[in-house]
Image 1 (cartoon, rainbow, N blue to C red):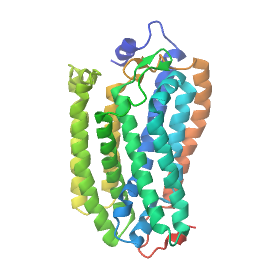
Image 2: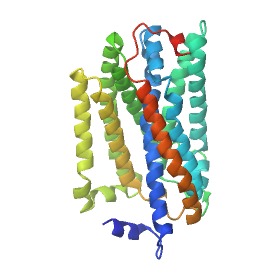
Image 3: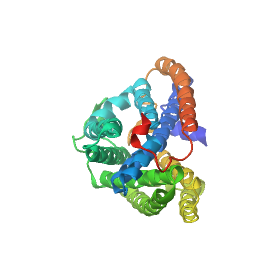
Image 4: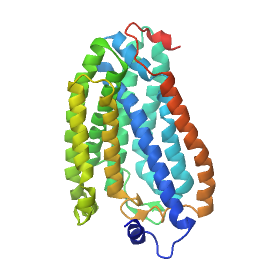
Length: 353
């Protein structure tokens, strides 16, 4: 089946490294993006919840739960963007002009958020300002990422190596909906992270917020899924044509099951399962996106083979990636292990430094 699928989309006569290297790189870049969404998603989610917290003590504990690891989480964003430039140069040349504005908004928001981490720990009279900088930086960055996702699913107008669409093609009702959906999803990750990392009244509050965000996430996923067939991108044919529907039916069914388990574990006062199940929910959504769009690097026309660099360039980059990616995994795992456990209730924000 895989050979038939590749033969359908790969240029005729392509073989050897020119055929399989783009597949390897598509898997590696997908891994980097998925890791970024998961690990940076929950600390952005903590920021989305931040100003709703009841007291400075709650906000201190929420921020301290992610302060030692948040900057390492964003390494995966660099790996994804750098890998795209290194091996799919044509996709990079088309996607960047199409998404300059939302990506610029995202980066500015992430800068505000990063500065807030450092300044808030030292601030006294201006502490509330940095609370809002952390919150709105997280919220705006998440919403911008969601709009980028929506624009990617809609597809891009291109001619050869140039983006031929309009400056604001990314700004559409569908992209706005995916932006709202990602805010809800990151809010769920952030709330379940706080359930896992905090205690007392803050944990109970986070549990209630997680239930709210779970409901909002399910509604947003349902709306986006129902909207996609009306975009005219033929995604629905991939899901509903026979025999695809038989092979792919387990994905939405498993998604529904995981959502139910998140609800059940939150209601049963479980601490760790809600967070890890929320990660599973995101990964299933990511899998659905991959099923819908693969092998297109610039939907709806250009595949990974059409936009890839020369095989020798891909192989050279793969050597570096094969070293950096395992090291990043090891560093990430070590950081989470060192800072495992819950944040104490009487912690002071200045204790981070």
